[in-house]
Image (cartoon, rainbow over all chains, first blue to last red; front, top):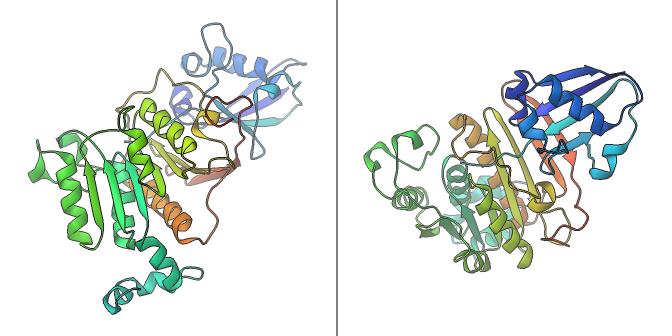
Length: 92
Length: 243
């Protein structure tokens, strides 16, 4: 199963690219995929995961232009799905 | 009523469909609070002053540093070591002496936020620290004041407009302070300028009453690739600020 993540905010510098693609065995949930992503790119882990490996509430998750809430994390993924992850940013 | 001189100054923007003289009068009778007036807020303030917003309340503490100058276009090299708010007020007055500028030499805090928000019709959040942003968000929701939210990082930025009671608020988007965010970060002045001008346009649309603000939508752009996206954002169930 191929899952693509578009990355925004400080997440891009953690993977040194605007996106990352995972190949995962099925079935997997969105939560599984994000945890796997953090495992593949260690720089991402402190930005998107809490110490207990849960996903930080401040990370925005989008699919097809719609924000996904916490309920979506348990959803089983389909092959060739793309998500967007965005970390909080501010001004200055 | 606009004087003939004011009509001459603003005629190009009054030609914009939906604006006209009534829209200009609404701007002239409006007050905008800008939280921090650095790289981002400085451009918001400059564009709003140029457009003829009647009163700008600007909250910004500290003295001008060399590292401000690449993006904080209301600061000058001659002002190094002097209060930022003095330079901000002077530069805005030079641009448009008809605009009343209330300079507050403080950042948003628990002690001043309620009073400052109460004086404004629209708030523009440009602060670098999330504790200031969350305070402003809480108070804008409590007082039902629209808040334009501008943020940037590196060559990326995003912007949305929170309408209390109708859209998500900042605490819906980010219910906790990101502990890894730091006040100093990589960015170009052209990035803060881009999102600052967009933030000013959001405020103008809200005040003058035309166009479609980014209510319930988050516009994001990366100027490195010119990639952009507009996404729908949601209210968070049980948000302690807006529900």
